[in-house]
Length: 386
Ligand SMILES: [Zn+2]
Image (cartoon, rainbow, N blue to C red):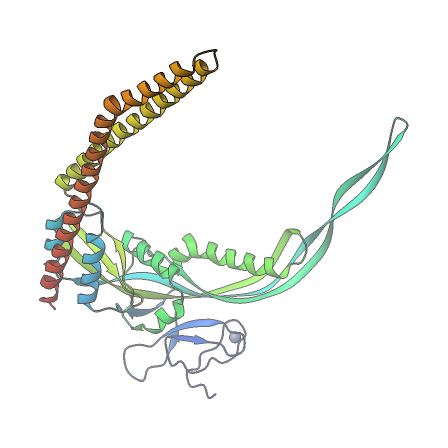
């Protein structure tokens, strides 16, 4: 491949292929780089440096209407949410802004030495009194080990404010960060609370060390290792990823939506207001249902106890001489008493329980219906804006 970009791999020194997207991979050692091209056409691609990071703008992958409808669905599914608020959300027009985060391409190369330990079990014979006892003694055998690491990673760093932290978290969760970066277009370097160098020092250098340690761990054979000495060089190039975030404001609430893929995600914004009347009605019905349930339960327990008592009494009496008739009488009396004294209140309690369940179900149904209507209304309002 003819290279016209003149970029060199920091890990192996080979010429990098001409970038066709913001990410470029060394064909020899797989090291990954993010290149930024100044907006002026024809200018050469460059790798960011700690003092002059590149910058890319990453647009949302859904249109404002899609983001708005997603938000309405999420907010409407909050338990006991104020439906008035859901309807008002339909009138909030999306504004968007770029939230900067730092992305670092990192190349780790070099060697390490350590002591690798293998667990060994040895049998030792000991004399205790007149007996010879065989014991298993576990010993660690340490042998020197050395290896070479060459690895490359794309790591995300926070740029220092709440929104940037949230975007960084989302970026760390995506399946392919490379795909997200590749959708970026050259952008002006943003001003972020933390510079690339600070973000690296605060957080990302530690993440890179963890990657180095993980790569080392994979190479070392044996059960355990210690005294790891590195002669490793870590080079890094920062790029500001300016991620488009949609904002929706209603009253004093602001919700942020990010769409790095076709599936939008909520970034932040406190929980929406709940409807206190809905909460009160829900709690009241739940209490009525609980009380009715308790009544039925206590009747069932009382009936079971009475029946057991009657059976036990009958058994005692029938086992004493000449008590057979008496036993049958007591049994009939017991059953009769239960039928008159216990049955009617029991049926009443059971009916009350069923009525309470029905009522709660009807209430849930009407709340769901009202919610569906509010969502529909909010979405129609939203759609009319775009
Ligand atoms: Zn290379």
